[in-house]
Structure formats: structure tokens, C-alpha cells
Image 1 (tube, rainbow, N blue to C red):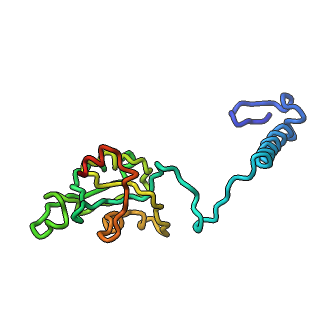
Image 2 (tube, helix red, strand yellow; image 1 turned 45 degrees about the vertical axis):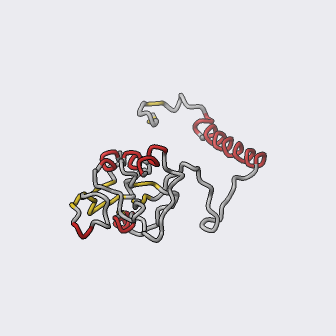
Image 3 (cartoon, rainbow, N blue to C red; image 1 turned 45 degrees about the horizontal axis):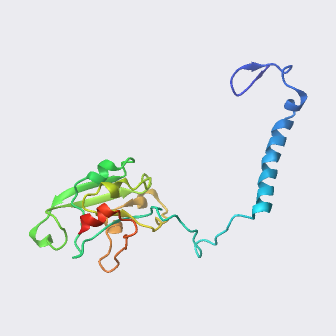
Length: 185
């Protein structure tokens, strides 16, 4: 008696000689290999890219690293409403709201701002729900790759990595929907 992967008992008398020496499985595997070899010869080998010197072309709707945008005056757009965190299906976004002081008027647009804004990039599924939920057009997914890190803690991106630098603005006009473009005006 022999147990199969379906946990039912099969006697050796029910198996043919070819099945006992795994010939059907071997020929099936060889058929798949032969099919791929013929396809490669007829259609040519798939393109190979010498990464990182040459990057593989990505789709226009490809979503990469997040950015927290600033307004025209250099102030952070995020008002810590929390809609991006609520919309995130992976629960990767956490934030802490704080009240703006009079000295910080040139740093933040509204009275309320995100004193702590973190995205766990290991949990993020790059779905774009956060940018769709944001009423202030503050968060976007760019066309940039997420940096390679060596430990898990480095994948929790805070405002130091997310907020765009004043002198290094990130153009996201291709990613903006018409609704988002009108909200910024």
C-alpha cells in the first residue's frame, strides 16, 4: 500500500510500470522545457538589461517611493487629517498631529500639521490609495525606486526621507489627476 498526496490509499497494483518509474512526469517536464526553448529560438531571447547602468522601462502608471509635497511658498501641505492612514489597506502609515505655533507659520500651511509622519515601506503595497485620499494633495508616489537598506528599521521612512527638499523639488505632474491639480490651485 502507498499513500498519495491526497491521503488516500492506493495499492501498487493500480499504478502502471511507467508511473512507478515516473516516466510521465519526466516527459511532461521535458515537454515544458522544449516548448520554452522553441519559443526562445523563434521569438528571440527576452531583453536583458545591465542594471543599474541601464534600467528596464517601466509603465507610466508605475508607483515608487512616496513624497510629501510642499506648496509654492515651501510650506508642508500635510495637515495631519489622517485620511491617508485610514485609506491605506496595509496600515503602513502612522502619524501624530500637532498644533502650529506662531514661529512655525512659514513651515506649515494650516494650524494643524503632522509632527510625526511615518510609512513602513515593508508593509506598503504601493497601491496609491494614500494619494487618492489626500484632500490637500500632500502625498504622492513618485517614479523613484525605494532605496536598498540592510536592516528592517531603515525601511520606516519618516519626514526626513519623505518631505521634499526646498531646493530639490520633485515634479509629479504626470501622476496628478485633474481633481488633484484643481485642489492645489
